[in-house]
Image (cartoon, rainbow, N blue to C red):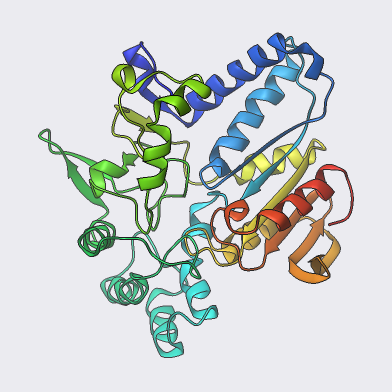
Length: 359
């Protein structure tokens, strides 16, 4: 429902998004000063793995500059977040094998051919083996391997073709201008199987032109196009801004920050901010094994060794705590958007962590 009357705003990117969000926060606290003293946390999932560290950086810089109103930032929470291309994109083959989605024979073949690197510039034999893995997984819901896949077969084939060609470039429109094939889903997920480097990101309609894999937006469309709903949430009418869209081609250009944001996490944890990194353990889009690996790569000492955490006297996942207020947890049976699949468990670990209690 967001839009701008200034066309230049449709040329944007990660850093501009962070600056705009910071401007919004300052204005919000100015309008509602009674909340300024409250502990403030930033939370999100998927591509918020990029949005949150970059926004946090803006907030921290604002605090250091003594901007008013002062935001009482305490930390942030990120679920199944896009973070580092090496860890994120190299994790899908080990995850697929560990979950029993591909055979040990195929896993050993692709591992031997690719030497642990399953994306980017790989040799022809490795590429062939990777395509075999993707073909085996193409009928799965990538965002929760336990969930059904609501997907038209013709779109599925198109999604596979668009994301599996060995070339790392496609041609865009009439200008024949090449750009890296990097998929972005509007809020729901990280760009599946595509490298993140500094530059232009292609939007979903440019890549498959129709719908998001395994996702049905029929109910969302009907609800958000209802004029009573729009009136209740203070959105413009359809006649003014058109129908709601799950994904959009309205942006003219989107620029990303690069291949990794781990440096932001090192910066903020060293400054004393609290950080919770959580992963639904059935997400094939950003598998938990890659997230756990980049968390460990920060080199912090473990102070709460790997153990189960409980909800309703049942194991709900596993957690490991590190020095510098860094915590990693998994949520058993959850997919890419953890609260969607495990709402009660999510409320439990959010509440405990925000209160400073042991999860």
